[in-house]
Length: 415
Length: 222
Image 1: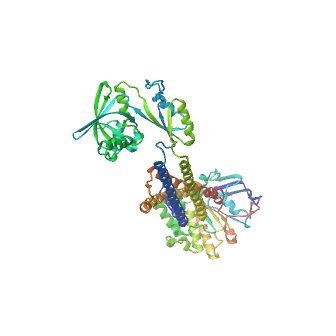
Image 2: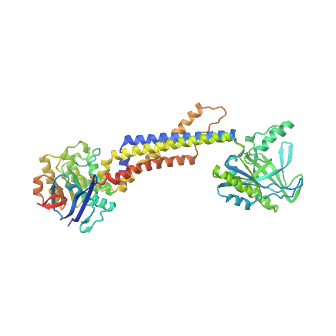
Image 3: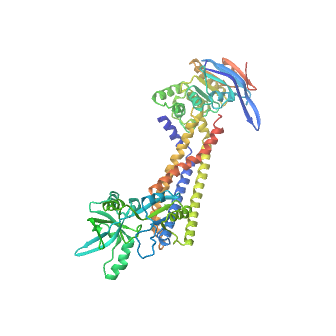
């Protein structure tokens, strides 16, 4: 085994100049691809934050069917969004995922104590899954609480941004009250009453303490968002069946959007999509993204071609070494393995080098580049790094295959 | 019997034309025997050696090694035989010039996966027999032609093969060094090694147990 490793080490040491070129090509390609990726992400975020409507184009918001009646009030003739309906929607071809937001269908009120000040208000509650609001939960403690559905201080709640805005811009401004700072909301405790409101009271109504886990703009209701598990339990306690306020449906791509939308409409539900996004902006977004994809593909193709040419040169320049090794008893398989291992190690190290180079340059980029109205984010996710390093390792290995095949097909079968 | 070749054929296709290099060739070699093969350039001598080592595949025919039929289409089997049973010596030495003499000699043992101190001591012993033990840490590229050929012989012996194939081992050497190299080969014969030597030198042909001339892909005993 040690002898075989020695031979792999020998292969690694061979053809240093060509290896250096391959290393540099991969390192620079990886840096360029990361840069294009980050550019694309920042551009998309900019479009999303500044031009897009509340619903991104690949999302469909589904609401229960609207009540139809000759009179002002009806007893709920609209199509109900329940578990069966959610399952049917999830099974429509083109649907990637669905995040339903559960309605708490019992009277609910909240009481807030602030020194001597006590404020009680009726409100509605909605239950959201952990995955749906994960990014809005301030810390690990709250994230764990959301999964469990309860916290030692009470039920964790998320305050919708719409509610904060309407308080700050409406109630607070009109009554001379202080405004709420959204980031400081986390940790605030108050009392929630389930089964009791100013309008009606159910048998078995009870109070529960609760704690604010953060704020969210994913559920825009003038109420509170609680864990779906807690919402289910509350409904169950009062003998209510689960129904949903709305559901966010993610489609695989734009092509599927129209088809999925029509199918949901035909089921009798109300759908909202990101049509608010101006078509010119959408076109610009698509064009820029296509350009960036083209650039990434171009860099990748150039990297593949350069690596392939380098590997041909590297293999050819060492053909005499391989012939000698073969004469002395090396199998073709082992010779190929040493070459592939060499390119894999080189690709792996160069990819990491590229990632580190970008991380290093990131500080200077952030310092020197400022675009008014744009907050640059140069973070690369761990998943993206893993993909880049995997691709950086596989590309030189794949690119060296033609050289190896050519060498085996002819050049090694003679002395 | 170390090696037995029966009805071997090999054709090369050059510029669309089929050229038969080995034509229904048969050969047998006993333990401790030296066979010398001579013939014009391009007559197929090297091809024959390459077929025996498995580097080149014949079109058809049978090869028996120690009475056992060889599956010469299997790269794994032929590489194993080449590594363990056959030692090769070439006119161009085919050493790794950037490596030391010891590293060159140890290379077949490393490919075999056995490069411990036992083999290392054996390598020193055979370098001593070849008269170049003092150069073991010298880079092969710095040696003279004769010294390089001695290193090649030591390398051919490190895995204790039973068959030595020498393809014009004296081609690039002066007469005195050639004779020294042949003396080394004779010493190997005395140790029980079987040798096939391709040569044009008359004194080598005379000293061989059997001598063949290769003509039109066939071996004609002289």
